Figure 1: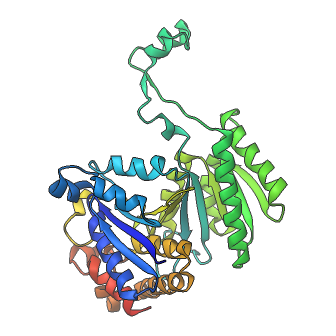
Figure 2 (figure 1 turned 45 degrees about the horizontal axis):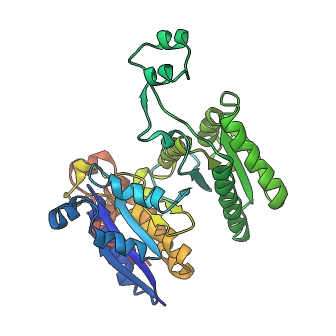
Figure 3 (figure 1 turned 90 degrees about the vertical axis):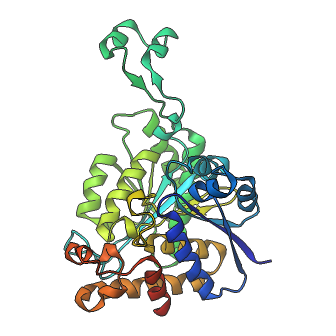
Length: 371
């Protein structure tokens, strides 16, 4: 049976980058792949008067993979379903340098690592559970001295790290490191944490994954760093890393930071995996000020689709798509000659001010030409 993909635009620039990517996938004419579009967010409200209509949920529930654009103010319930409702616990965020991409470092060649960010716990487990510390005091969970020291307006959040989720995301990261090793990678896993301060929480995260790797993945090289030390190492020694497994908010921050090493958020793809249906999305967000202008860079979405194709078993097509992206990005080395084919992110500010760059759909067309 063909693989079913549902494409969801979402908010802001989401529909534009999704439409360009879906056009490209359909032009590739991949045998065994069917793509349907579902309306969510701003688009859905216009038609169904709700951001998450049952028709779109049915498409999601009957799909093999989801290609998602961006979440803004109206699509949060959709994102909650994709993440927590579908139990997508592992957020894979590649950081790979393609020759020609703008970068602040002198020697970016060889940067090719990937974050496996735990996606359900950490600080984000406090969503909907924040509150005034007065509640903690009233329930006897905070002594009077501490309560008075913080003041009545102070608020709390609940950061949770569990052995179950640490084990799940650790196993996923180990398996990904083994897969990358089979494709020529170093077979290295780096655990990031802050166990020198959060001894119980991050100690549990670190120790659980270390034990798992030792017991079941002895072929891997395993090391670990405190998150603050890791931040500087990623900037100073970015080619030293392979697979990085990291708690939720830490992974969110460091993956955005390191995206700037390889061209910025317009190049930053992701895939989110669990036991049911995975979804694939760029990490740049909805960027509402650019919505409707046709200037958004679709490469992050296209590279997310590349991860999706690889997951679905279309490995040759995934490689062809990535090669097309790499070919276009390489032309950024001669902006004066090639600006009309390049996305806004890959040209200097002086060119942006003159609107000398390719629009969203044009970028997808140029990638297809180079495949």
